[in-house]
Amino acid sequence: MRSFLLTTLALPSVFAKAQDAYDYLIVGGGTCGLVLANRLTESPNVTVAVIEAGDSVKDSYNVTQIENYFVNLGTSIDWAYPSVPQEYTDGKVLTFNAGKALGGTSTINGATYVRASRAQIDAWEDLGNEGWNWDSLWPYYLKSEHFQPPTPDLVAKGAEYEASAHGTGGHVGVGWSNYTMGGNAHSVINQTYQNLGIPYNRDQSTGDLHGFSVFPSTIDSKLEIRSDAARSYWYSIESRPNLHLFTNTLAEKIQWSALKPQPKTSKLAASGVQVRPISGGDSRTITARKEVILSAGSHKSPGMLERSGFGNPNILSKMGIPLKYNLPAVGDGLQDQPNVVILANASTNWTGYTPYVTYPTASDLFGANTSNVARHVSDQIPAYAATIASKSNNATTADVVQKQLRIQVDLIFNKSIPVGEILTVPSETQILAAFWLLLPFSRGSTHISSTNTSDAPLISPNFFMLDWDAIGQTAIANLVRRAFHTGPLGEYTGADITPNTTVVPNGAGVEQWLPYFKQSYTPNNHPVSTCAMMSHELGGVVDPELVVYGTQNVRVVDASVLPFQINGHLTSTLYAVAERASDLIKESA
Image (tube, rainbow, N blue to C red; front, side, top):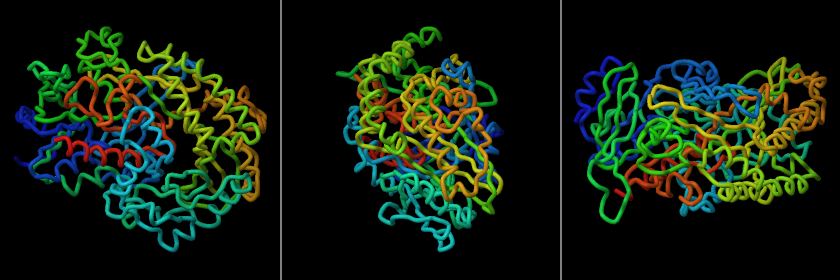
């Protein structure tokens, strides 16, 4: 077998060979898919094909330079999915960015490397995911990481770390940009938040995110280029003779074995994946000898299952898709975070890249009122759950949602994990803060809009469906306002620009902040839970082995399996999940 990279011009010859069989078919050459491709083909006796809708962007300057990532949004390497009009924010239509290139969203994201909280990962086991906890995932955080300690110049700019929290033998470059902002910017912001009662945290990779930090990025610090999934896991091994890549190729649906299910099981076996060129043309089937693995992301993997007959019968029947297995949670339970920006005038001499993040807890946000807020939120759980269930098209029940929400309430108010994130971005004339509630309770969905793979999914995150989301976001906004006008940062800032205090006065409540949130928020593009790893009884789509319920040999390995939203940023945890998934697959072979 010979290795080949596919281009648009090569597609006809590819489909002439499309009936070839591979041990594993990976749908999606993104953040998780390329980890799997690399690890599974470490054995020369295992063959893998990766099916990717995009192309290589290895030499794209706008991809390699992390400070340019905004330039890629809305381009040919961004799926830029539109949402449906949002019921709870006056019909607003959102855009969900996701990478459409080899390397997936790791090629166009902000490259932030921040892990989740220890207690949050431990809570995965409470949802029926035996063996998934911080201690089991920790070795894979380290395995994936190629940590690059900061130079003395970067240390002077605020870069610090705990050596025991990092791995040095992995594939993903983690470090700090040499263009990190100089001067006293980091110490000014740090001292300001300390004056507001929020501690300094020298390294959030330990599983404790609380406080202000100067975070690292997924970057090769020596070359000053992005360390995306393709650069980390693919380019060095793309010539392996047991590894094939189909680029510019759409995966349409899973094909099922014509044979009856194995004795003593009613589970279906996948026999391959139907694909076609993204530019058009006839469909073909690529055969899978062992497994089909979906790594197409939170908005694409559910659609692959739905078009293949796995999902909510209420949705599939409308599309004329024969039901293979009743799995109503497919595409349901979508969780993301609402990103809001506040601006103030400033006068500084600060320039450069700004890796400044603050993670406040509920007590940081609500102070002496924390117990009252906790009581209100706890009392509202039955009503929250009923609202979520009523919008789920019978995909879940209020009792099931209550269990999920109570775990999150415990994490927020009893285990005191951070509940907000604030990115502070100073410049010479302005200071910007982008912030979001890390753990909103609102749930939405993403489902196919038709049987045509080219049609965008129907995405509805239902931001601000529940009052906790607005309560939490308001508390973070008021903390940012206080930081802007507390010393020493306050010595550099002038009047608030957006929103000004005439529109939203200092110390404003939910009623005054919510109109601004509704008008200005964007999705944070951290979508999770649309193929959630949970027990079947709790509405899971995959089991702890990441195998889809009702199948013998279909797995999902991407952000869609995370059972609920995490704090930190997704990339670091997804690399760890994919590394662990690779071992699970090898062990089951």
